[in-house]
Length: 261
Image (cartoon, rainbow, N blue to C red; front, side, top):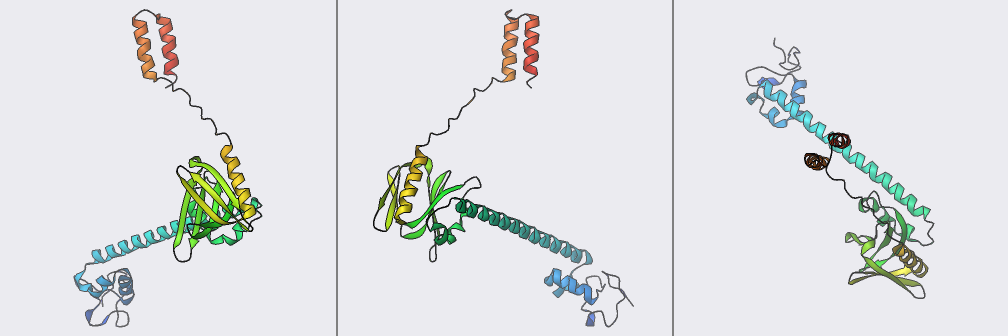
């Protein structure tokens, strides 16, 4: 009576393959349970078992374990990303709700709002939103701290996104009719018309953006870079050699520079 080369269980007529089908290269046999494990790991090896050694079979197990680990890792990353997107969507919806808008954009633009976590950067916050049509597409125009972005989640043509950076907008205007209005976004040489906007929302949105564009830009103060310490040391050395600096003065200034390193 022989034993399974893999699990060492005693082989009997009830737990091994018939007609020597469980033999590997070298003549050793595997039990039915181990054969199933081999088949799960690599069906190609199981189909031609006699062509493979025990080492090759065990290697296939290792490769399968690596593949499974990679699959689980990718799934975990996807789940983490989905969780981040879900939290970001909650944050965006909270921002929109806190605006207290009296237009229906937050309701009718739900499918576009659901796309915003993929469109907006993590440091972008929403400060206004209207609904309208642009280039024959129905969607929402979102104002953030960095840009205006029109989002159209169409049923037939997928997702369309066009943004207008605030620093590229030269002016914004609006027109109103009996029911609907129009918002005109002027950029360098171009005009984007957002039409079929609720007339009250068109006026309020345009005035809001106009005020935002008129706000003074923050002044960026750039400090003059300090000379390189090694460069300063070289200059001190020349002043000392020329006699302008005494030995004591040179040592004191040199110590101050070295303390900066």
